[in-house]
Image (cartoon, rainbow, N blue to C red; front, side, top):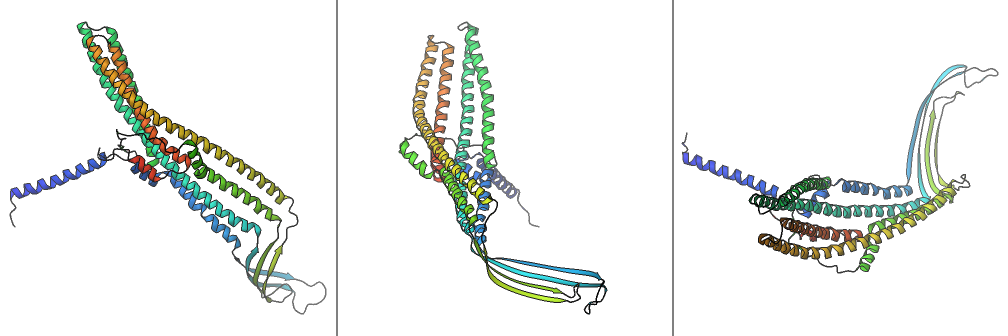
Length: 459
């Protein structure tokens, strides 16, 4: 058996250990890699139950066309039967040469085939056209679910970012207040500060602890909202770039209203509903019209005996046309037509509701986006001013012209400005998607544009 040197064994062990550590490091880095908005959306496409439900509903709706076409296709039916009969006969008068008195048993069978081809049925022709509109409406409802998913993912994503940023700011604020508290205690011990400064700092510290608990709870709720869409809670999300620029709108409100009026899916869905309601009136009115079918049949009836003692086999083949003219059906057709006319008017009213709702939502989304753009710029300036105020207040505190309460207030104002700026940036990105969603033009490329505003890469 060949000998293996100790140095070779050590070298082999080190190589294997290095590979294991490298694999572990890759796994850790993969787990630490922040999820981008597009990646969360891809998870939502695979796991969102609302979208899955909409897909199933859409696939089921596709069958409506086949069912409507079947109304004008031939139908073929087969019927068959077999029987065993026992008779017991006694002649009270006369004599029957073909049948003796007493009991007898005989069997028989029958079968028949019938084919029917509709030639003219107005209601079926209307129902075929109606089914096409129903499928078109189902397709629009699926597209609406996809657009809704884009908006829901975007909102949930930035809700998580805002919640985790609040925690980060509160931790930094807590550290600053703690530093101020320790300094106030030290100054109180040497007699250069009053107990009021210590109590004020302590009160601020206790308050920020309570705020931290609330922020952590808010963060957990926001992550669960993402989990409800994607099936899993991402451990980390990509943050927004610090150099984000909230660009102005290239189209004015009137242009967005025109886009919404043409592309809003809720309006289009209601337009299809109105078309279906009008077709339903036409279909029910056809209940007064005649129908014409081509009918062919073949039957065979066989019995090896009967009550009169004779067996028989009868084969019959027929072909012809069948015309039906409804004369009176108790007023049911007229009642159903009146009901359909009222449903048509309701669909017309619902369309008007959808148009006004789309107009209102477009105005709201446009104004919210305009407001968030202005807020981003305003809070950017407020952050600069708050930082300058804090620096000046700290300098004034050091020379004795400012109190520790002034420093705490300045710190609070700075962290509030940071929080408001982050919230304004997230609202800006969400409102961009929301406006396009309300207008009916949001799509995956819009999500990719928002994704470019994130710091995507290893955490």
